[in-house]
Length: 110
Length: 289
Image 1 (cartoon, each protein chain N blue to C red):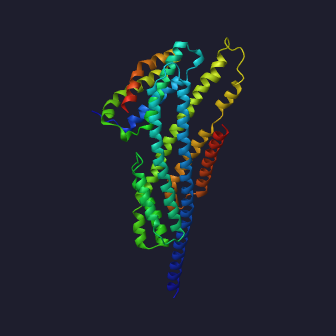
Image 2 (cartoon, rainbow over the protein chains, first blue to last red):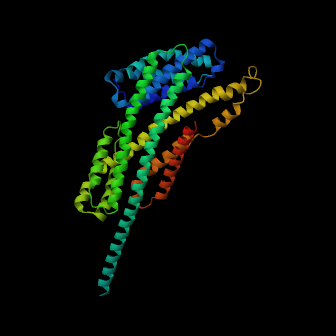
Image 3 (cartoon, rainbow over the protein chains, first blue to last red):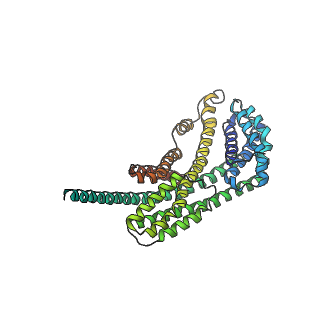
């Protein structure tokens, strides 16, 4: 199994930031009430993950985290790539929805 | 006789040249120790700004996204992360203080002090580095450059015994300089990314939204112009990151430059001054708010 490196951890941090940036780029006024609530929940989760990644040094990661983080990093990178081409706010919300549970499990892991 | 005179004159010239080289080295080393002290103070200020920015940004994010899905655990997670950032910050401030103290003592040594307290300061610096995560590897080039400058000061002012002692410090000092650069890059990421997030949000909600939504807003809101100006104007944070990066690179090459004699310390002083001005601008803005 490939080792989870500092570089990969930086990739995860960067992908999480890019997902967060896509959410910040949404014009709130254009969203329906339901989408607005969804947007709030997504920003809460993704910002918490971003903050935790910033606070947690790579060297202090547990063995369990190092084992599970490669798959999470791949999923976060894939989400970042999918978001890059999207223009509609609703598409951004739908894409982040597919990886929201992954960010929730990241929060519990690190 | 002519030959003896020639040999004597060449020897005198060599001694004079060596004497000048040592004086230049010591003068440059003194100036460099002063600059490094200023740099350490800047890093302490920058650390406080970064931590405050993270705390405020987090509080804003929690407030703006409070909505109907508010959960206690989200709040607790944010608080735990901030506590961890505060703990890292306390370690870093000790590290900057240790660098400042080391260069203060090295400055005294360059000024002719016979005390060996610089070695104690180096030990203290070594102790504080081990508490900071992720110290990078030191290249041989950097090691020999640092070893060289310390030796030159020691040879010019002190005994060979002290020179040996000071050479021992080469590694932690090289580590401190490299680690400083790495930490600055982390600060730059923390501040730069939050700055970008604020701008992205401002663009979406304050500028482009009202601009294209003509049916809902036939006239632009009064705040639109000030938001536009804010969006297109570089922030003090952007200026700080730029000047800080330059000062960092100048500091890292300063050691080697002193030895080679081709480095202008006035440039380093200027870059540090830019960095200090940007830090002061941010503090003033904060006080005004």
